[in-house]
Length: 83
Image (cartoon, rainbow, N blue to C red; front, side):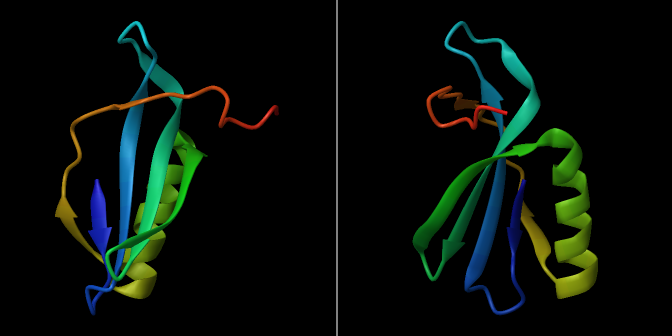
């Protein structure tokens, strides 16, 4: 899912993740934050937190859904925290 701020400067994308064998990750998603067309951060976020963040940005900050991201991104375990 892609969310865009009221003024269009901030964009937050959420992508599902897949492993190299093609199976989907069932616990994490990828979050990409872009400001004025430049990527600011990429991080993994728990799927349970995605819904809360989406609701917070839409209801609290006036973001709007601008796209549905259907292509899963490849999971890189080297980037995941050792939790």
